[in-house]
Structures are given as structure tokens and as C-alpha cells.
Image 1 (tube, one colour):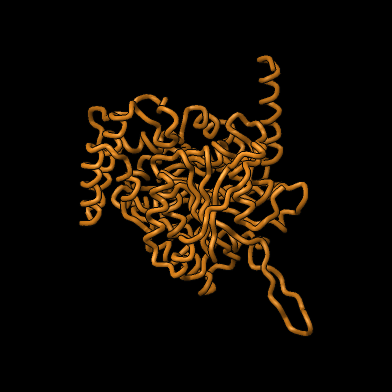
Image 2 (spheres, rainbow, N blue to C red):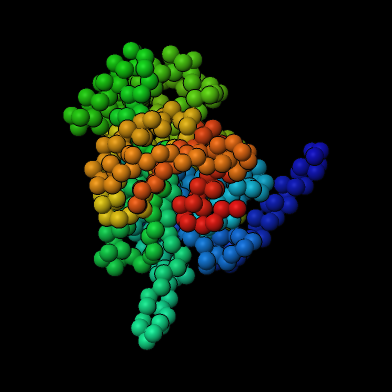
Length: 445
């Protein structure tokens, strides 16, 4: 494709974007809006209705995607880099999750992506507040979007039976998994009380920051182990902000000993501009640039603050996509290293379907580390789960080759995705899509 053809193609895609999203977001295959979740705290969501050639969206599940960071944007990175209908260059994505589910992207916590706060004290400082904020958004969403609520009533043999449709799943990545666990627990309680009407069917924790101590201690170098022990001591003594600082030191030691291995895929070096402390910076700034700024690359930043902002039409003039993300990370730093394995235990005990999935090549949240914290669960089904053999799955993109292993028992499932790093849908899109279909109990092609 020559340069002129390329420009014409981009213009055609932009025209499609505007046709689908304008003039009213309440028409067509997408919807988006803001919800004020607290005084001075405004959260943005963007919904794509399922677009399947073989099923109506009413017959397919609703999936909410939560990005990591904290401070990474689901409407940006998750949407255009991983699972949305278009990629960052606005080309159609063959492995988009929209072909199998309606997908709800939420910029979470407040201050992430297009979400924003009116003042500095409105940022969330822990996952409890993150979960409370999300429940406000979900209550608003399901109230307004009645076709995603609890279903309809039919009569069978003179008896009235309530039927459910459009199950709701929460999928997540990285720190988003920690938030997803807390949100799922609060949502389960809210549904039981009747304060939210939805058919919550399960949560999937992808390369998730559930137990930071385990990934922090994995590298085998003596120098790394020494600082990892300091991280562990800080966590065990409840000094979580200090643990975050020491974790930053541990990562610097790993980089120094590996010639800048890419924490998100161990087969590659980190090709981004070298990240190091500059005069006036602190360790939180360093960690933000390591783990959140990479989700806001210039090309994506230009897309979101240019044509996408114009398409959406309701972003306040003083709000820049990603403009408050460092404030989000800084505000959550004191809670960053706090583990939430106990929340996963509570979800399993409550009967919630929980899936853990991880990329084989991930270092920042490695699969072996995930298996280690899983083995600490108090869930009564764990002894049976541990005895199961891993079941191989063919890679849909490479027939005859193994693409993943998984095992499942009752309401717990674990996927180990091969040839994938931290961002599984980016590395192994076809395998990630098949996993989605399996989790939501659909037939795979």
C-alpha cells in the first residue's frame, strides 16, 4: 500500500468511527458516558455491543475489562492495543473480543484515561475505595442499560420462573486483577442485598498483582534475593509504602543484572528509553514510568487525545487522556504491595467463578509465582485442584501446536498461556479469544 492509499484508508476508518459514534452515543453499536462516583470524582466508560455473525448481542455475555497500573487506561490500551474492534492504527482486529461478547471498558480508578477528579483529595488511595467507586458506576450502568440487567419471566407448568440472560464477567490484567478481585467481592455482596441487578457470572484475573511478595522474590541472583528479603520484611511488618520503594530497588537490580530485560516479556530487552531516577524524581515517578507510562506511548496518546476525543464528543475541555495517571499511581502507592489472596479465598468460598490466567514469558507477574500464591489458598477445593493434570490446548493460530495448558475444578480455573508475556491478548490474540470463549462457556470454532 503506497502512502496515498494509506492516508485514504485511515480517512475511511475515521469516517467509519464518526458514523458509528456521532452525533449521539446512544445510537448504534457503541455507547459511552461519565458517572460521578463521588464528589469531585468522575469515571468514564465505553461499551461496544457484541458484533457476532452467528448470534445477537442479547444472546452473548457482557465483559468488563480492567487495565493495570494503577493508572493504565482500558479505553485506550485495552481497547486499541489488546481486545477492541480496532487496533492502534485503526485497522480491524481479527481477534477482537467484541465478536464473542459485549465489552465494557472502564477508565479506573478515577483519574485514569478520560476519568478525572476535580481536586487532589478525590483520588482513590486503596482498593476498597476503588471497589466502592466501581459499584457506583455499575449500579448506574445497569440501571440505565436495562437490557443488561436480570432477564425476563416465563411460565412453566403454571409456575413462574425467573430467567437470567446476558451474564456479566469481569476480566482484568496486571494491577487490574487486584482491583477486579476487590470489586467482585463487593459486587457479590451488593447483588445479594438487591442493590445491584445483574447476572454476575465470574471474574478472570490475568497476570494479576494478587500477591506481590511472590513475584518480587523470584529472580535467583543473590543481590536480588537480598533486596527481595527487605521487601518481604516490609510487607510482613505492614510498611507497604516502604515495600513499594524497595520493590523499585529490586527491579533496578534485576535490570542491572540482565542488561535491561523486559519485565513484560523475558525473551526481549526493554527497548523503551532507559528509565532511571532524574534530579527531583522519587521512586514513585520511576515506577510510574516503568509500568504505566509504557501504556501511554506517543502514538496511542495522539490517537486518544485527537480523533478519539473528537469522536466521543463529551470529554471536558480541561481533561487530557492520561493526564492524571501519575497522580493515580502516586495515590495508590501505599496500598500497592498489599496482597489480596484473602479476597480470592472469599470469592471462591462464596461460589464465585474465579479464573487465573498468566503468560509463560511474564517476569513482572510470573506464572510460577502465581502458582505459589494459589497453593496458599484456604479454599476447600484446593487439594483436589492440585492433583489435577494440566490439559493442553491447541493454538488456534498454529494448528497442531500447543498454545496453552489449563486445569479446572468446581469454580476455579487456571490457564497458562504459552508464548505470551504480561499482555496476553497482544502476544497471543487467538489463544486469548479462545480462552474468553471457554470461560464464558461458548463453543469455540
